[in-house]
Length: 183
Image (tube, rainbow, N blue to C red):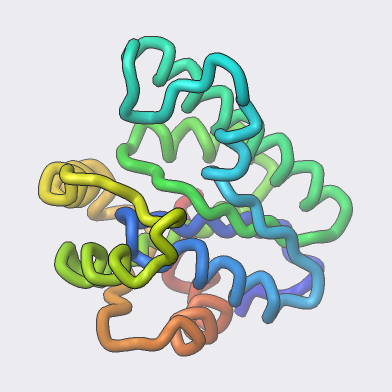
C-alpha cells in the first residue's frame, strides 16, 4: 500500500482516454499527503512558442517534452522532500523517457502504472469528455504497439476496462507498491 512516509513517486501513464487524469486525482485524494502533477498542465506553462509533443518542428517538440519531464521530476522531488507522495499523470511512451524519469527521481522508489483498458475503451472514454478536454489523436495503434514493445515488461500493466475509476484508484493505492516498482 502507498502510505505516508514512504519515498515513493507514483507515475500513472497510458494512452489518451485511459483514465490517467481521473485516476490520479482519485489516488491523490486517497493518500494522506499527496500532490497530483499533471504533465499536460506543466507542458502548457509554455505559452508563447509552445510546440506539443507531436508537433513540428520535431526537434523543438522533443526539447519541450524533455523540459516538461525535467519540471515534473523537479516538482516530484520537491514534494517528496516535503513529505508528500507525488502522483504524476503523463504519457510516457517509451523506455528512454521512463529511464529519464527514473534517473531524475533516483532518491525515490518509482512506481510505474500503465492504465491499459484497450484502444477501443480509450477512444470511447475520450468521446465522453467535455469537447474542450477531448484529445484528437489518430495514433492509438502505433502508440499501443510502441508502449508494449518498449515498456511491456516494466511496472504494472493494469487492465482497467471492467473497473470504475474509483475501483481502479483503490487498487492502485492498495497494490502499486507490490506490482509497479521499477527501480
